[in-house]
Image (tube, rainbow, N blue to C red; front, side, top):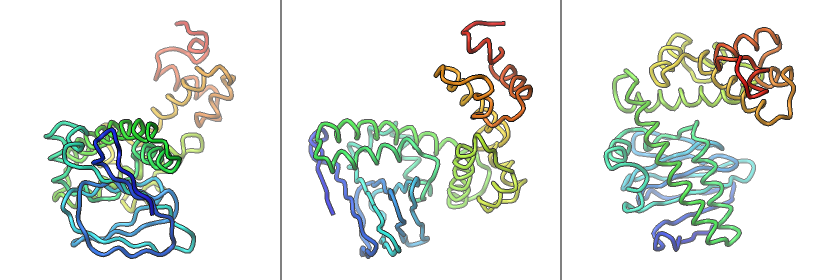
Length: 278
């Protein structure tokens, strides 16, 4: 296990990285912490629930909450935790946003759908292992910004849900973020509503209704937006033909792609490729 203090923040932020297949940590409490695993899985036990963190998921644990953790995996688990003190915590977002987040069930729920935070934690961990103090400081600054955005987004999205009870909203939010992750992972191949409902353990109707409440658009509209953004990015690289752009964006019918692109961007894909209007 390795930990470091960050000079940029007067040695107040502390990180721990551990690679093991067996671990039992007794109940303890501390500063706000961000936890993830880069491989394997780690189980966290709170007084009222148990949650498991897997790769790509982030667990925010609010200050002074008592919890224990354990690892029992066939292969090695690569676990990483970052502890932030109160003064540094206040740089994440406005005080009201932080207070609302820490007072909600979301702050002790394992959340998918936070790629910028997951990437930030990985950058911090790698910089520490390389002994790159400047790099770890820079990565931490970026992580702070990403975490602030995540806190603001998660809090606002959860508030839009009509489910009663903070714990229920937190669990529902976790499932909706998982749904969003699945949509991002299936831009090219697509994914059925039935599969999304199965993966999130929600009925199709409940998933559609809550997804719109949370993200402001339907599941189908969200996927179209992802595909159109992928299409525009692909065109801008200059490496793909329109046919290849359509395929990368999940369309096998070029005419359907052309109609969807014009409807979304207000001009044809070929015009977008030329940088003009028609």
